[in-house]
Structures are given as C-alpha cells and as structure tokens.
Image 1 (cartoon, rainbow, N blue to C red):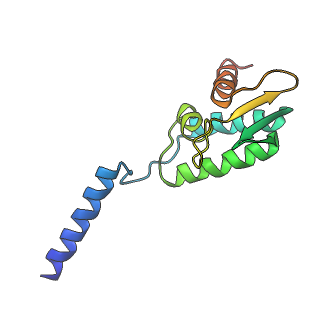
Image 2 (image 1 turned 180 degrees about the vertical axis):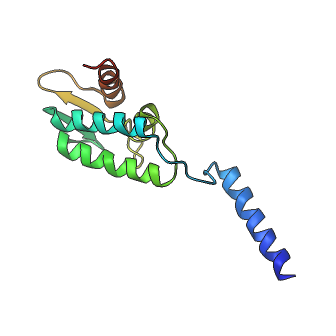
Length: 128
C-alpha cells in the first residue's frame, strides 16, 4: 500500500511538472552557447553604455551583474540553451515589471536591449 502511494505521488509530481512546462531534467547549457553569452556580457561590461531597467539607468557593469544573476537562475532550471534564448528570456525585459530593457550608448538614442544584444551576437559570430 505504501509503495502504491509513493508511486502515485511520483506520478502526480511528474504530471504536474510536465503540465507546468517545467523541465523534468535540467539540461546543461552547451559550452558554445555559454561562450557566446559570456561574450555578450563581456561586451556589455566593456561598453560605455548605460542599461535601463524598471525606469532607472544603470552602468554597464551593473547591467552585466544583473543579467548574470538572471542567467544563473535560468541555468539552474535548464531554461536556456542558446544565446538567443538568453536574450529573449533574461536580457529583453524585467521579469518583475515586464518593462523592456534599453541600452543607451553615448549620445545615441536608447535602443531595445534585445536589438543591441542581437547585433553584438551577430558581430561575435562574424569574428568582429
């Protein structure tokens, strides 16, 4: 009887995880994707750009730190497998407010962080 209860509990847990969209087994982030994401974060930190989140402008170093924490959160859950997913799931908008992040470099007008990061990713892949 106890084995049957344990089996039912395990089955319900598996079903709940599947229905909630949570991965049953967190897959590690591929090394190539991790390298690209690290490259993006390094480019951001080395830029003289500012990063807007939740209505406030932050330094590039602060932005890098914030996005690295979000990356760690996603990696712990197996929820990121590529640089594109990182941009979409962590670096495009606030998970708290839903507001889009922006990047402002020098006197240029702010742009969506997703667009800025995609351009940086394209340059990384092209060896620039």
